[in-house]
Length: 312
Image (tube, rainbow, N blue to C red; front, side, top):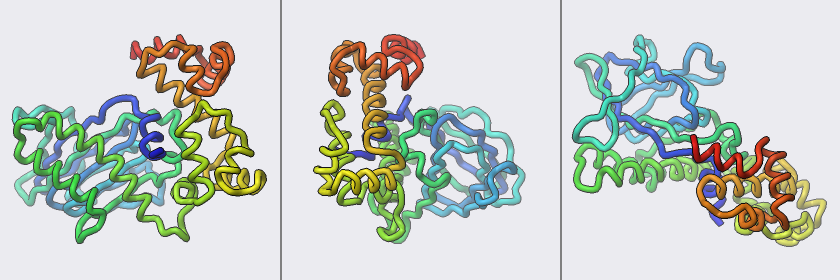
C-alpha cells in the first residue's frame, strides 16, 4: 500500500489550479494565501521567493534558479520578484492565453525574463493527514546537476508542453501538475538522512512501524488491535505502541480510527455506496455504530455529510 498516495488522496478536495507567470525585470508579485498548498516551478530564469512582512522570522528570502521547485505546505501568502527589494504589485486574476492549457500572466519591465508555473493544490487543511502536517512550511528542491531525476523530468515535460502546446496538452498538463505533488514529497522524503529523519519521514522507513501502517491502510475494515499490529511489526505490544506513537504522533488505535473515518469520508464524497457498505468497509458491524462514530468525528451524520459535499 502506497501510504503517501493514500494520505494525499484523503485530503484532496479538487483539481490543482495553476497559472504561467512571466516576469521581466524589474518585477514583483504579491501572492495572497490560498486554501491548500502552494507550489512554484522555475521553468527558466531566476527570481526570489520573499516572505510577507507578518511571516515568522525563521522564514527567509529564497533565491530560485532554473529547475527549482518550491512547495508551501499551508499556502502562505508571499512575494515572487526578480530581487528581494523590488516593489511588488498585487497579483491579478489570471487570464487564459489561447495557445496554453492553463492561465497566464505577464508583469514587469524590459529586463531579463523569468518564467514560472505557479499554483495551488486544493487540500483540506482542516483535516490534514499528519504526514503532510509534519512537513516543513516551505520545501525548496533543486533539480539541476542530476538531483531528483524524476522530479527534474516532470519539470522538463511541463516546460515543454507549456512552451509548445500541441494535441493532448489540455489533458497532459493538468496530469503532470497533479503528479508533481507526489514527486515533490517523495523527493523531500528521500532527502532526509536516515539518522536525522523524524516523524513520518522516519515512520515510512521504519522496519516495525511501516508494516503496521501499511496493514491499516490496506485493510481498514480488519479488526486490528494493538496486539495484532505489534505482531506485524515483530515487537511486543508495549514496545510497538511506544514506537508507533513516537514516530506517527498518536497511538495505533487512535490512528486506525481516524484513518477509518477519513476513508469513510472519501467514500461518501466520491461514491454512491450505501451507508451499510461504507460501514462494513471501514470496520463497523452496523450502520448505527458507524453513524455514531462518524458524527462524533465530523459533527454531522454520514448522509448529511454526503449531501453537503455533493452540493459544494
